[in-house]
Length: 472
Image (cartoon, rainbow, N blue to C red; front, side, top):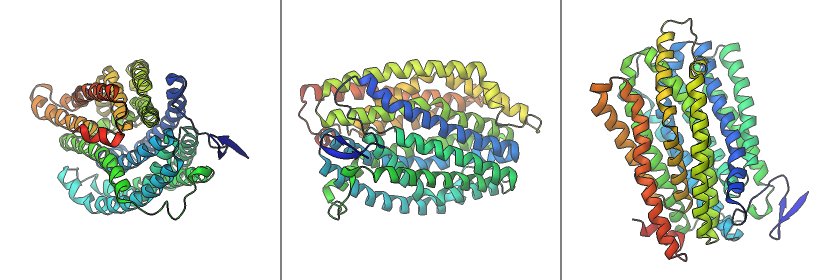
């Protein structure tokens, strides 16, 4: 059954949202809430994945997953950065009601995503052993870590496909389809985890395989929904790459990927400091890092909503709505982070215990480390939510240079804290490094946002690509 959107025939099963009119709060929540539910489910099946491995195989297996966390996130962040960046011009074209330009950007993004995924997959697989050696991953867990990463990295093209399609749907204001996709993936992933790890005893590599199978199912679900949107039907002309368009998309996507890369490298350096501290410390450190996703789940959701909201309103040249929306996003973020922080501080030990078999050797030490780390991060969570609000808003306006600088600031603060404060804080320097890196990023982002808004306010006709060039 078909509906009408601005004269364009659209399947009603896919609801797009024009965010250039009406309440910013309503639009932000309309995108963020389904995404938040989806991210919660995604993080829950990540938590369940770690819990099944930790309780079903042992503390060593949980430590093996933890030893790969930042290394895995390095390539995941690159993929997500490209997908998010490619979607920003599409959100702007949709806000400007230029569906022809939207299709041309979509065609170019498919070609760029395929090439990027192939390159990233090759680099990831070739770097597993040398990087684990560089990180001083303990030898008793290294074989499990290698097998886990080999399976995960083999599925990078599928991960790219899902992230590109989900980013496009969010750029059109459709938060429901990615939600349903993640719900489906969560159920499949948990079911396969139980079957592969506990039922069949196939080890940590099977947990990675379960994740990829679930990701593939969610990708096909998003593809089926996108095919129902008539104004996204591509012609042969739309699939012809144009140099100027590709340069603009890479000019937005590459800085986001580089920003994620710098952040991940900083995390890997922290992992290098954590690995020699023993399996119990790594397991506790891993348990809290798995909960990190739950801590930031709402901030990611608000961030994607802000990127879409700002991108559409920039395309429509409604600068006053951008300012109003960003202020609304900041308030929402702070209030939400306080509620999450309170829950984590009150119930942190119970949550952490889900990952660790308390009867196993070294389990009590792992729980103590995890709770201490969790309390420190939760206490300063509002800083993280402000970080995502301003970073995503700048990215939605096509300004990716300042967010990239904020990633560099995170790297400097994260590594500097460990190098300079370890002698006074001992292992706790690893925990405080996260808080200090958030603060360093906000110190770059907020003044940058004010400067960009000031320029756009006095020159509202400035084109997004011109504005991005001027910031450098």
